[in-house]
Image (cartoon, rainbow, N blue to C red):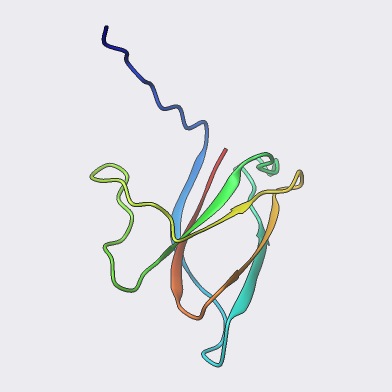
Length: 93
């Protein structure tokens, strides 16, 4: 018997480049993820893709696992330690 699977992503705030810590060491990225209407994205995750080495994320063409993941708090806030670099960031609820 063949089973069909459906992937549902209710929200994806997609991918814009951000800078992390100064070049002297690892840093912490903190922030809040909000929907267009200002409502916090709670109960989801924030995902980071390192720009070095691999192709940028392109969900319409291929799947690339994120390099770093953090939970979103009820108010949409997050905090994550990452090494120096440039990242794409997104959120999924």
